[in-house]
Each structure stands twice: as C-alpha cells, then as structure tokens.
Image (cartoon, rainbow, N blue to C red; front, side):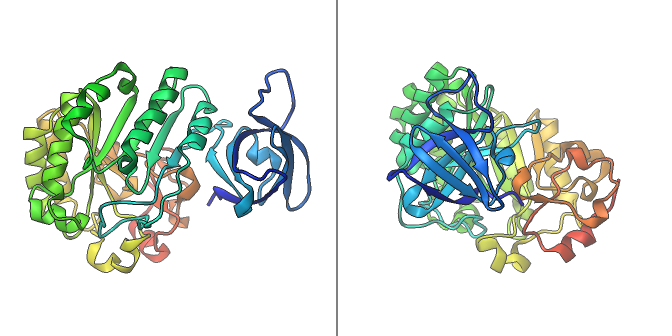
Length: 364
C-alpha cells in the first residue's frame, strides 16, 4: 500500500502547497521545492516557504508529487501523485461532512469541515498535463458554491484538466442549470449513486428519508444542463434482487447518462462490521448482474463493472470488468501469480479479507 500522508517538519507556520523536484533546472517555478538531501528517514526540500523535511519516502518516490504541507499537524499529504511512467488515480477530498449515512459508507462522515478549497485549487493548477482529477467527500456539494468556483477557476486556467466529482446530487436546484451548462463543464463528469428503483429501499441504504426523490430532482437539473453523468450502484445483498427493476428504470428514464458503473463492496468503514449481511458473492451467483448488464446493453446504455476481479466474472462479461481500484490501495493474491489478465484487473482492495479473496480467484 502506498502511503498518501507522511510525517513532516517545516519552517513555515501556515499550510502550503508545493511540487517536489528531485533535480533543479530551468523549468522550475515558484511553486516548486527542490531536493537538498536525504537520510534513512526521508528527504529534505527547500522552496518559497523555506526548508521542510518529509519522512517515510525517498526523494525519488516523491519526485513530481504535489504536496500539501501542514506544519501545525506535522504532516504532508500527497494530493497529486506524479505519473512517473504509471497512471495514478488522483482524488481531492474536499470535505468529510455528508448529509447521508449510507450503510456501506467507506469513509464515515464527520461533523466538522476543514475549508481548504484555496489550497486544493493551487494543487489542481499544478497537475500534470492532461490530468483527470477526482473530487470526493463526504458530500462535496454541501459547499456547492466554493466547489464550483474552484473548478471553474482551474478549468479556465488549465484547458487540459478534467474533473470527476462524486456527489449524491441532493443539492442541485433549477437555478444551477445555466451555470452548469457553461462550456467549462464539458470537462466535468458527475458520479452519482443510485441503489434501487424502490424509493424506500434506496432511502434505507443511504440513511435519509426522501433521498430518492431529491436524487431524481438533482438528476433532472444535470440533464437540463447537458452535464456528463456516471451512475454508480454498489452491489449489496440487500439490493441485488432489486437490480433488474433498477435496470428497467435506468434504461427507460436515465438513458442520457454516459455510463453506469456497478460496483462491488469495499471492506472498510461501515461495511466492515456489516460485511456478512451486505457482501454479495457474485462469484457464486452472477445471474442477477448478468441480467442487468444484458438489459443495459440491449437499450444502448454503457454499463461496466468496478472492483470485480476479472477471473470472478464469466468470460462473456469479463471485458466489462475495469481495473478500477487505485494503485495505492490495490492488492493481488498469491493465487494471481502468472495471470495474464492482471494488467487489466481491479484486483482487491488492500483491506479485503485475504482468506475470502484467495478462495475467489485463480489465474486466467
């Protein structure tokens, strides 16, 4: 597992954003900090905010990363990781507050909010060319005006940047249509969860009465604005039987979406203690998922599978299983050794139970 937060000490008093550089050169900007040296603990850098040291990673491993250094907390966050020959997933956490309480939430919400939109904007402006930057929470649109202003500023200054925002779509209103219809938002995709066609079941899963109807209103705003939308549905034992009805709803009423991502559960957060009652073993019974995929394909809705190891999916649907788990939290089991599909496979989340994972997989 690749650590995203590292111990740090700094001469600065206030948090700052900087890009780390292993070697100095003509391409350095005032936002860059240059490598000075390292020891067994970590590396030391110097920039516009003075000297600072980061422990737990080598200078080579940090080269090109965009960091948020927080002197008061003694830590540095890798907000944007450099590609360095790979294709890392970079996601900015804008808030840990949320107005839903999903039964399987992978990051249980907090009541407090640390407003750092200005720092996240600085980081996004330092992203590598052609970057796709994720935005997540909590619920980002609890701070809708700050969020939109931040993205608009970045999109105006960086025509090569795209955003993908995870949101429950509860806070869009008719007055947002004109703003969201702006040309800059052609480079924003909104990832919106929907768990069942039955409003009561959806509301029970997200822990909020009336959430389904507010979701419909929010999706209508995104439709009217011509926004790019990805629907997301987590597969659970509690909603598996209801997925065919949801597929009928999606293919009838929501065909404007770009893609529908059907996702396996993550063994973390609230789901960890509810695992036996929530986790649906698709490797034991794929028929329900297959029926959903077949209906989506029949009606021209692009559907895909997230967090489904490829060998656990029947061959006819294997091409739909994406390498969806970020590299910093992905693992493969010993049984995966020698598999020719590993490059295209999601593998498992680092925290998935090893015994269960090993029982599910085998090389293709």
